[in-house]
Image (cartoon, rainbow, N blue to C red; front, top):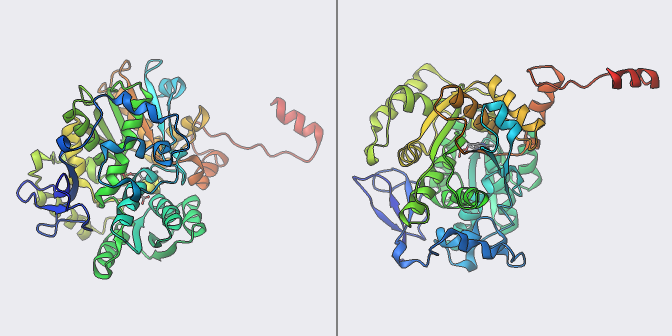
Amino acid sequence: MSDSKYQQCINPNCRANFGIEEILFSCPKCSDLIDVQYEWDKQEVPNQLSWFEQRWAKRCAPLDYSGVWRFRELLPFCPTEHCVTIGEGQTLLQQNDEVGLYAGCEAGRLHLQYEGLNPSGSFKDNGMTGAFSHARMVGAKHVVCASTGNTSASMAMYAHSCGIKCSVFIGSGRVAYGKLSQALDFGAQTIQIVGDFDDCMRQVKRVAKEQNLYLMNSLNPFRLEGQKAIMYRVLEGLRWQVPDWVIVPGGNLGNSSAFGKAFAELHQLGLIDRIPRLAVINATGANTLFDLHENRNLRFNNGHVDSPAIDDYYRKLNETGYKPHTLATAIEISRPVNLKKCLRALEICNGLVREVSDEDILSAKAIVGRYGLGCEPASGASVAGLKLLLAEGIINPDEKVVCILTGHQLKDPNITVNYHKDNQGEFSNRPLEVENDMTAIIKALKG
Ligand code: F0G
């Protein structure tokens, strides 16, 4: 065991340490979540973020080309010979005044971080490159995950490129076709469970433990190490300036957790001088985090989370037979596995949580589509959340904001086509049906 990098339980009453090569998805002593930790004074970390720019030019060096591993000094858990990359993280930060105007920002203030450009079309590739590197390091033979679609697509893509067997658990009927088609195409063994994501998550945790399989959900701390790189690229896109706000949709809460860790570490290392505020956006039909954080005042409390309150909340969900429901199926989750780490991120980033309706999500998604980068419904939640926070006066129009667009427009074409074809919202763009006749076509063109 190399002691300058290790795994550690996040519970301050436990804080048990484990070797970096152990395969753990919860603390064996107290069942809490696990972090990857570094003794930074024993790592070689550059003293300025702009140092990383020298790697931009090296397209022939796969790890320098990767939008994750070019920051490898900031996630130094893995010897480079084990690092897996398929060119993830070639994403872009786009300043977008039209979308900003829709939300209520002043010109020049809104940036969209477009993670749909990853090889499998979502931000998940940032995490998978981290977790697969660890999986290879420890010789995993069979990887599994539960998924609302994107995790399975990404895991299947990496598994097939690493030659590792993979099985995905999905809720039947709850995965958008773009994502399901990817998992099938990449050759994943696809197990459709009669149930929703939360049912799949519960089963996959049990099966992975029982069968010694390597779990690829964001409970896996090495996934979150990779997802920190999304924030490094945001800073890079802003020429290393820290934005005022980062806004991200919340599902299983891996991204928000990773972002909080990234900023805490950069601040600790003296690489940034302040930490941006974080807004996590739930769909109203899957709003556990919103309800717990905003209505019931649940806080990280320096690690002393009121766990009985969470257990009680989940017990009531069970008793009432509550099932989450949102058109943004990617975030249709009521028992987010990273809840405590997300609370920690909210504490680090002076963050807050909001819920937005499906209608607002679809409007924001349509605006993102019309004015530049298309995205899938869950990603629209970040722009809908921005609009709400501006209307509430919590975000000022002159503040610099980054909305994370987590997944590509083509992930869920059914939602998009139905929205436009059936005139479902104020930004619907209905196709015109005309006779197979030139006069009729010209009339339609002029209409
Ligand atoms: N946006 C998209 C497009 C997603 O696929 C997900 C999660 C989220 C946002 C939420 O991110 O879990 O880090 O809070 N998708 C998971 C999946 C759950 O299985 O693909 P989170």
